[in-house]
Length: 349
Image 1: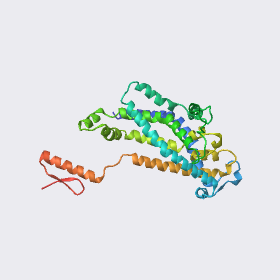
Image 2: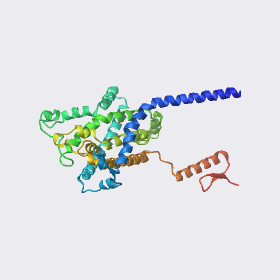
Image 3: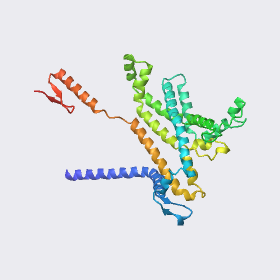
Image 4: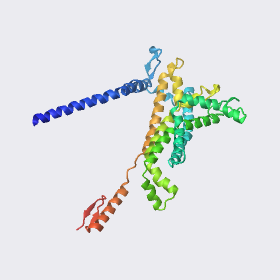
């Protein structure tokens, strides 16, 4: 018996090692790409942020401590002004775009979930734009809102409005409006699918119980629909917030020649100054800007997860619940169990 048990243990251990090797083999492509193109660049960028670093002239490289980080807050530096200005324009756009990309997909999912005539076709139409690339979005909306008579919108209106012109906060309102419309058209489908799945998972019995208690449509939405969609809302909000803090594609593909190089987001700022020979001597400073931007994104994402996360019950409610259970047990069994000061119960004499 002992020999048989030992043999079984060896077979289980061998099977476990085989499963681990198979799992590692399946994960290895992702792990290799993650290490090469994410982990190593992050570590190197963090190290370069404490240096005066020039990849084209190694003789000038030197450790300078926190000087790069201190320079980020030197507003007399024109590069620093460009960095913080890009922060401001990005945040203003996010304040408008993120709620739109939450509310519009949720409303569409709510009505499609009622299964109106042709709802399957509408569901496909809503999701279809999300499969195209940002380049295709730029071609479509760039031609629609071209600032000449050949633009589709201008030809309809008989005007020559320069939709995609202007500088940040100086005549570029129409450009941001076009970017907002393009973003809604392009990315509504992803959140729409998640919200649709969450709505289908809500038990119909909850709606029936609310209706039996006299609940109207607004009560159904407030007390049944939204609480049961909390997980889906948290996922969509997290993904949308992170995506639009990294705004890059829309302002790059939707512009005119006079504002093609205008930096309206931190990602555009980092991309411009980190590439090429002209700003190579600023590599350490740009890496520090990227670290600050990354910390800001992590801070907002952490706040979002804390706000949308499950909240623990307060101690006062827990104590009240224990007292209620003690009173119920007394009514059922006749055994008097009084709650103690810690919220528990004990038998009385």
